[in-house]
Image (cartoon, rainbow, N blue to C red; front, side, top):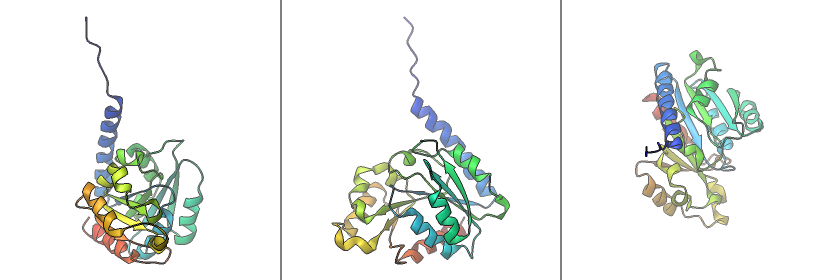
Length: 221
């Protein structure tokens, strides 16, 4: 009796996505465009941090932002109104992650000749987005104080793929059982190379450190 062929669908999808991701990364590199993928859970403060960061960087670099959501354009309008940079809204049609092809299709809607940095605000989720290569040159992962310092242990892949991690909402730490040394240890259990920044975007605490890190990445690109 002939053996039945077993097709690993998820593996095949991820492989094809990685191929497109590598192609997109090279395409953008040739055009001098740095793609930053920003990932976190919902409510971690991605948009607030991005507004602060963009306003610190926009005089040095031409910036475009892709806002990815299941629905709505609230964050896109917030970014546009508070920074003035170009924003594209992407609706995922219910998907909890982005693929490299989705990013490629959206990024091509920009005037790429006038961009240095594209910031991709990924779908709020600590699981699915980490599995899919977006074609980015760096992954910035956010973890907010209210979420707890154990999240790197519970959602390992997200922190394994992080280029660097930003702890947000430092200002509310006094009312939460959150240990900054412990969270750094937990992150480095998953990713020894990841730099960790502790911030409060609302109060502009240590956001300059993140802006300086991004500047170094762009200058060395």
